[in-house]
Amino acid sequence: MIKEQGEGKSRYMPGLDGLRAISVLAVIAYHMNVSWAPGGLLGVAVFFTLSGYLITDQLVAQWQTAKRIDFAGFWMRRIRRLMPAMFVMLAVVGAWLLLFDPERLASLQGDFVSVSLYFNNWWLIFHQVSYFESFGPPSPLGHLWSIAIEEQFYLIWPILLTVLLRFTKQRGKLMMFILLGAAASTVAMAMIYVPGSDPSRVYYGTDTRAFALLIGAALAVAWPSRSLSAAISDKSRLVFDILGGAGLLAIVWLIWKTNEYDSLLYNGGLALFSVLTAVVTAVLAHPASRVAKAMGCRPLRWIGVRSYSLYLWHFPVIILMNPSGIADDVHAGRALVQIALSLLLAALSWTCIEEPIRRGFRSPFREKIQGWSPFQYRNKRAVSALALMLFLISGYSSLNADRPADPSPAIIDTSSNGQEGTTLPVTDPGIPAVVIPEAPIPMEPQPKSEESSKPATNAGITAIGDSVLLDAAPHLEKLLPGIMIDGKVGRQMYQALDVVDQLKAEGKLGDRIVIELGTNGAFSSKQLRELLSSLQDARKIVLINTRVPRKWQDTVNSTLEEVANEYANTEIMDWYSASKNKQTYFADDGVHLKREGAESYAFLLSKTLQGG
Image (cartoon, rainbow, N blue to C red):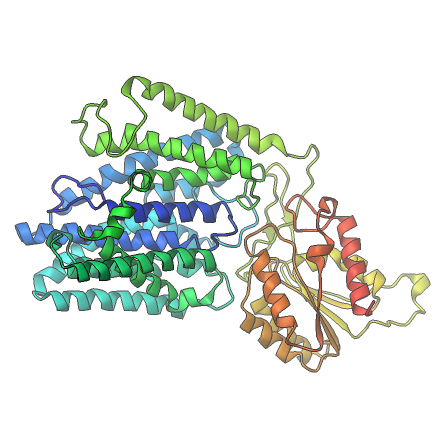
């Protein structure tokens, strides 16, 4: 935290900047789809808890000094600290899109407006935009939902805290009221979350994420930074260091081991993680902590001080520099350039925008900003221009480097929330949208006239799936006459049990069952077990694993493999391995099947069903 004038008796705590650095690096690793940081999204939870602590610490200090909170002054400082850097980033991204991708810019008008007015998280919820399960190129502003939550907190919390402070004189009662609010938010997340479904609603919601901010706020009441003294016993210092070190290791371990589809996260896990973050924050805020001194080392402090600007810039850089327009195809060389450019832009933002405005332009530009800064005043304009040109040129060339000469339309699953879909976007904005029927498509065989006398030898096969199954359906009908295919665009695993129950009721469920689901998102082992248990009378069940260049691919395939081994009548059709390095099988999205891929898919399934 950088001390700001008029915000109470605050002091600089370098250890917290070190924690900020680890958090923003975890978020960057997550957005770059680095395999060893599937839980990098937890970095945002750390930021929330830190913000709740630091802001409440400042406000309570101001109340104790003046018996009032200066709302206008607080909000103005927040505006000066946060808005200028964000609006510069928005202007640069908007200019880039205007020059090189105006169609995409037009489609992102709602993003720009909602980000500018700090209600982006609710805009995403109301428009059912998934944070985790998206096929089209994501918005380069898709990470700013969290900034909206923080701004909403900054707007509302000083007023609520004033009411609490006015009517609650005891620290214990004040903490109790704050923690009750945190508990209500935790319960709201658990109640709204549907296991196995896309968790974006509870991930985005101010109501379902407030617990992290409030846990930090409760810590500020119990552990005010201005009251902490370095004069403590060696035994107490050792306890602090053990707690802080173990807590930091636990945070890193959870970033390594957790993923966004773990249902425990949304059933109290994120709240417990916030408590863990609060413990670490308490240690790092203490002036006697040796862990705090280690976390306040110069490299971590440099990144932590600029963590806000680094958070602003990294995602647009990643998205706009990736040829596919998504962040799921990791390329080491490009990733290094993206990281370096993000750091450069963050340093420029801090040095040229944030720090001068925060100080009211009272400091000379030649003054070195806290920590190391390589930018002298005479070079700032040149470096800024060079950075912007590098951003534009590298992004534009990367975007066009691998673009096919003759793109073809790709049907894309977008209704991952189970909503009925009609018109679906395509990968290239210049290609007309593809219209898909809304209802499930039961496909009854239509044998050719010369084959009309042949018996339907595969009438006992029922295939349930999504649009990938629909891609292969014509070829499956030729190889397996009599097969009944129930496919629906955007279908997910949690919907499969209802489909099975309906087919049973209609007498259309065969004794050989094919399940092709996972294209549109992950699911829990419990859901898959429930589905397979409902099919225990089936002679044979074939689960088809998935090839989808998205974060949930490996989670889906490992879950299928794990659960299939528990059921004697179940086996895996390994489409993931069979399609490896077969780019000609797939449309531009890397998921849906061209004719060659559909024929190979149908042949492999036919062979699997027949036991070959």
